[in-house]
Length: 240
Ligand SMILES: Cc1cc2nc3c(=O)[nH]c(=O)nc-3n(C[C@H](O)[C@H](O)[C@H](O)COP(=O)(O)O)c2cc1C
Image 1 (cartoon, protein in one colour):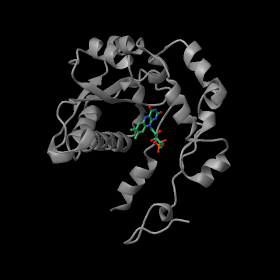
Image 2 (tube, rainbow, N blue to C red):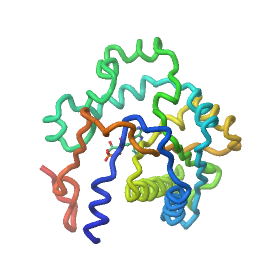
Image 3 (tube, rainbow, N blue to C red):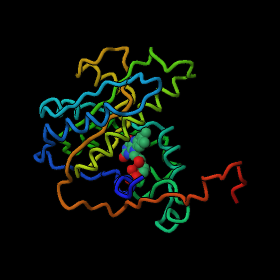
């Protein structure tokens, strides 16, 4: 592997700051990104994805008005990935900084009341001015051959995600995954607004753009495990 592709992979990151709605992605840029998706590996070459590229301002606004509620399960499982200091996160090498999230998401004793008392929030809070949203959709009736739960089909959608993300990164375009687009009831509202057939499923959405001001992500620390904690030479080795 050449150094440049490894560097691109290292530099690809989740951008959670607002994008400038006036800094559009060009048609040429979008075509390159969709071309990258086109060449993604998929189980049995099923190419089990459809992609809606939404840049129409009115439609983006309509999508932004869709509301979604955080579930208690999400809060509990999200909490399990937290580190409470940069030092702890750096030591662990996995997970995320708890300080990236609102204080009430960091207090398990409040999870129940947070889910009960917080009104559904509009997707515009996640979209943060994005000039382009990609929604990746698949047909759950068609699974990868003999793949329980369509495990291999779903992995294929992840390959599409990575191809898109790396292509965007190579063009200097920032990206954030928005899993919330596939949660109920938001998913149903989105399908209605966008005319997506009822039997299809939204896998995930990605927002693309250019950060408004200088990208400031003070609560963000990207870490990875050491290779020695996941790489086994030949046989499974006990990891200390
Ligand atoms: C399947 C999947 C779903 C994700 N969902 C979200 C999401 O809903 N919101 C978000 O901000 N990041 C999401 N992410 C991004 C991860 O949190 C992120 O990739 C990880 O923390 C590593 O950080 P990095 O992307 O900056 O390297 C998702 C990533 C993947 C692969």
